Amino acid sequence: MLRHGLPSRALRAVQRPFSSLPRFTREEVAKHCTRGDCWVIVDGKVHDVTSYLPKHPGEGSYKGTPLLDMCGKDATAAFRDEGHSGKAVKIRDGLVVGEVGDPSEASESTGSGGFLSAAEYKTMVLRRKRRISPTSWHFVFDYGDGDFGLPVGNHVLLKLGDSERKYTPIASGSGSVHFAIKVYPTGDLTPKLEALEVGDSVEIRGPHGSIELRDEKIFVGGEAHDIGSVGLVAGGSGITPILQVLRSAPKTGFSLVYANRVPEEIWFRDELEGMAAEGLALTLTVDEAPSSWVGSTGFVDESMLKKALPQSSSLLLACGPEPLVKNVLRIGEGLGHKVAAF
View 1: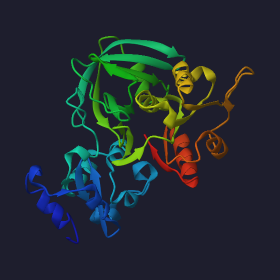
View 2 (view 1 turned 90 degrees about the vertical axis):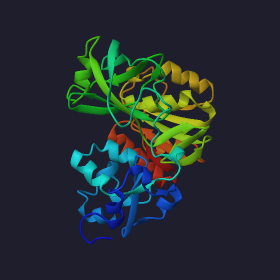
View 3 (view 1 turned 90 degrees about the horizontal axis):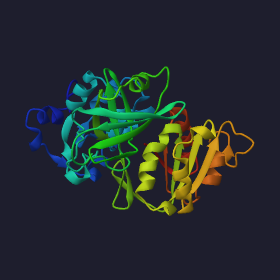
View 4 (view 1 turned 135 degrees about the vertical axis):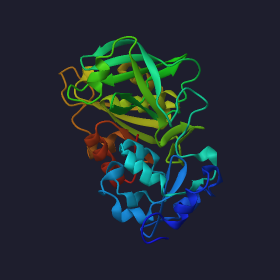
């Protein structure tokens, strides 16, 4: 290892074609998990970040997880979701020491030959839009022919100008993809989406994400979890990736807590209550409830999670506003669950 600059292994790696890089299994990468020997996986490539740890700007990266905590793990979703600069990408690429040995276990799915590309932006055209609540819209974009190429549980990045944000479609196929999007008046991207007219275009890139449903298992960062007692928590528009999972799996294996401000803002309520009839353990909670409300009220707290989630739940997944997700993951860890955010 060089004392300054690139690690010697990385220096040799960037001097030859990527196809000739050494290959490492995830089990081998997982052994490099200390401050003095730290490897991470990003986009299927293995990076030795040991020399960079002291230079890492802030220990709040990776959704509040220090870089050291990602050692030996797949950091793809965390790196992308953090919105790193071009300079950060160059630093990352300079630390490559190899690639994940089995291509079928790449850190992020690349779809199955569909429209999407995780490496470059593609263009879609707005076909129609309609308001579905006082603050939310249903957008339909045309992308062309063939499959969309989004694995269940993954998300995409939508971009307009210099504004970008991650979303999970509510449906796709036959050349079009549907999004339900809540507009925030002070947001960077959503007011621009609301202003779109039919025929306008947006850019899209993906798939991204470390959570995927396939082969009747849920994979989190490449680690497989059986479907049987999985806890789910959603807040507001954070229901979209969870809905994608629930539509594709047996309902009896899941418990869902879905939080909103008022009953009128509950997305897909009829569909979710239909899933409850098929075995989904569903808890709907709102902050402000009318006298006719028969669900739960108040914020998602430890008492609510203990009551709503199975004691045997081995996995707890959450999506929604950052304060909600952080609180849920903290509580979940305290209750002994394996936790992750979409």
